[in-house]
Amino acid sequence: MTSLALPGLLNTLWLGLQGFVYYYPLFMSCLWMMGAALFYWRFERRDPPFDAPVPLPGTPGVSVLIPCYNEAAHAEETIGHALALDYPEFEVIAINDGSRDHTGAILDALAARHPRLRVLHLAQNQGKAMGLQAGALLAKHEILIGIDGDALLDPHCAHWMVRHFVEDPDVAAVTGNPRIRNRSTLLGRVQVGEFSSIVGMIKRAQRTFGRLFTVSGVITAFRKSAVHQVGYWSPDMLTEDIDITWKLQRDGWDVRFEPRALVWILMPETLRGLWKQRLRWATGGAQVLGRNLGVIAHPSQNHLWPLLVEMVLSLVWSYALLSMLAIWLLGLILPAGTVPLIGSPLIPQWSGVLLGTTCLLQFGFSRWLDGHYDTGLGRNYYWMIWYPAVFWLINTAATAVGFPRALLRSEGKRARWVSPDRGAHLRKRRSKGVQS
Image 1 (cartoon, rainbow, N blue to C red):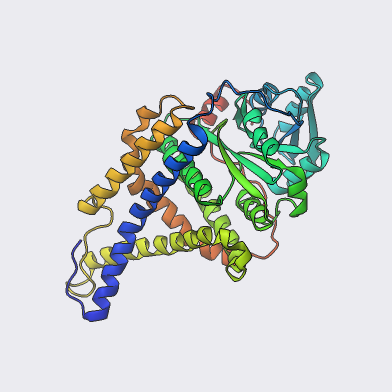
Image 2 (tube, rainbow, N blue to C red):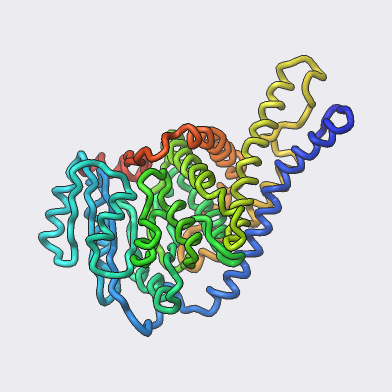
C-alpha cells in the first residue's frame, strides 16, 4: 500500500482508514481462533463422540417445528429424518405456510402414515416467524426444536440440545451446528469452509466471551416458556433468528451453542441466490441493530455491549472497504494526483497475502475442530483462499445496501417467505421429476 503525500491530518486519516480495513479482519480472526480454542478446551474435548451420547438424567418431551413454504421437493426427506430422531418422547409439527405447490398434500399423506406427525395448514403465507409461533402454540412439549423445510436432522441432535435445558433452567435456546450438503460448485465448496471457519468458529468464540450474536435459524432448540415470555418471534423482522436471540438475552436468558447438534442443509450455489440470501441477512441484521441500540443506555445489559460494538465496527468496516475500492477505481480514471494513489484492495500484495494466509490458518484450525463431526472438509481447503476476495465483496456490498434498506423499511411490515435458491442439488431433484 502506498499513498501520495497528503497534508497533515488528511494523510493521517487516510493511513488510519487503510490500517482499519486491513487489520480489523486480522484482529477479529485471531480473537475468534483464541475464543474457539478456549471453547474446545472447556466444552468439547472431554465429551463423548457426537454419535454416542451419554444418557441424560431426564428426557423432557420435544416438539420439532418445521415451517414449510413451497417445500414439495424436500418435505418427505426432511420429515423422514425428523421422525427418525433417536429420542424417547417427541412429536413433529409441520406448518404449511400457504404453500403454492404440493407441499400441503405431501404433508397430509405423511401424517396419515406417521402418528408422531401433525400438520398445521395456514391459509395464506404469514412468514417463518408466524409459522413458528403457530407451531409453538400447538406444541404439547416445553422444548421446541425449529428447523427449515430442507434440513436433515442427525438422529442424536435432540439429545445434545436437550441436555443444556436439563442442566440449567436459565437456558432459553441452544443453537446447533449446520453442515452444508451441496458441495458440487465453487460457491458450495467455499460455503462449506465458511460455515466451519467463520460461522462455527464465531459461535464458539462468542460463547466463550459471553453472548451469542444469533442462533441459527435452521437448527435451534427453545424453551417454550422463555419464548412466550419475550413475545415469540417478531413477524416484521427479516432475520427472526437474530431478533429472538437478542430478545431472550436482553430478558436475562442464557443462549448456548452445541457443536454436536448436527443438521444437514442446502445453501445457494448461484451468485443471484447468494446475493439475495446475504442481502436479507444484512438487512435483517441492520434491523436488529436499530432495534437494540438502546442497550448502550442500560448498564444492567452491559453483557451485550461487545456484540453491539462488533456490529457497529463491522458496518463501518464494510463502508470503509467500499470507499477504498471506489477511491482506487477513481485513481485509475482521474488525472494523477486527483485522489490518493493506492494499491488495489483486490490484488494480493503483502497485506493480501497476510489476509489469505490468516484465512487458511483459521480454516485449518476450524477444519480440525469440525472434523470431529463432518468428513471431507480437507478437500475444500484450497477453495478457502478465495473467501476474502469473493465473499468479502458480496457480504460487504450486501451490508452497504442492506443498511439503508433497513432504515427505509416500513415499521411493522410483515416479513414473508420467498423460495430460496438451493443450487444444483434442487435442480437435479427437479430434473428427476420431483414436484416443487
